[in-house]
Image 1 (spheres, one colour):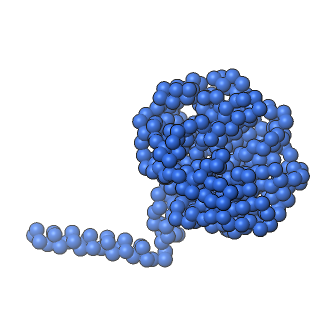
Image 2 (cartoon, helix red, strand yellow):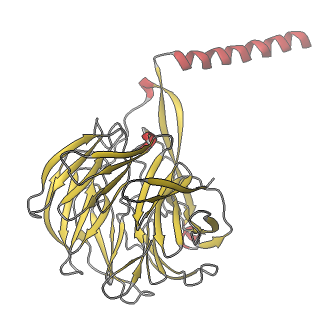
Image 3 (cartoon, one colour):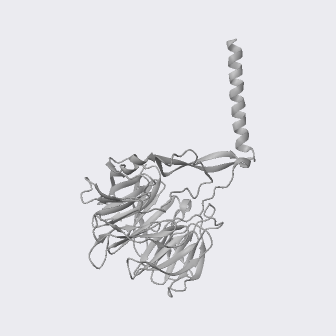
Length: 413
């Protein structure tokens, strides 16, 4: 009897294994990115800011440089604090838990962070004793957390009365193609003229401080805050900006917004009331933007739910701010963040690595270097130094006119 039962169990196991093997090769099945919600109770969410010991990163997000510190976002979870006093040997010193966080900006030792719909203000004067000094509830009302690049979003069973979605966990799963329906979602330190110390984010940033104002873009709006009193920001009138806004970049009296549909330009001569100037539409794609004196550089990432089929670099003439015009395009593989410094252009081309170009002639970009053995995400060019975050690794490079040299790597996991 025992022998028969054992044979039966072995047979069942073999059958399951055979089914799994069939699924791997059966063309009725395919691999999909499946997103499921990360939730907290509303009480846990509103009381979730804390400073704890350094820990492994879950998913690398954006980076931000301020004084001798680098802040690396852990998507939807908070911020890793890194002491960069010695760039050849950076050290993780703390983790700030901020549920639902993806963006920050810093001015004069006050850190502003999104926590889904809330704006959180932290005093980081003593990095070992970070304090939450204010929280403005529900001022980022359209700051929607949605896994745009997932193939399948499973969001049933959320208790919206008592829970809040702070992010999404994505896994690759094999599913029967006939059972899958498409998921759609509807509609270092810079010092300004006044001597105020602010930090610097990358091209993927959605927060930007200009003088005494913080601009935070969500999917449709520019959320404007007067931060003259750093501990008590004043939420001003939101300004409608367009559809699917993703990033923000500032040059002088203008904001350049990257969206899935194009680049929008706003005038902030009146800091409190951004006003629409012009736009450049490129179809539908995920796109950050950076700007120099005469050109805007936009990367478009295709092959995902953002809509575009092909990826590339678009260079747009903005010498006449009212009529931006496409000048040149270059093919890319899967670009994310990008940065410019003097005549150098740095592009994080995903799994194709970091690409460095001389942009002195935009009609003929010259490749200076290509680090193709790393996965890249976001980049910040500082004076003679480049910060870049890849797949759970922080990279630092030193660059000069003719070379770029790796200074250090710091594993975040």
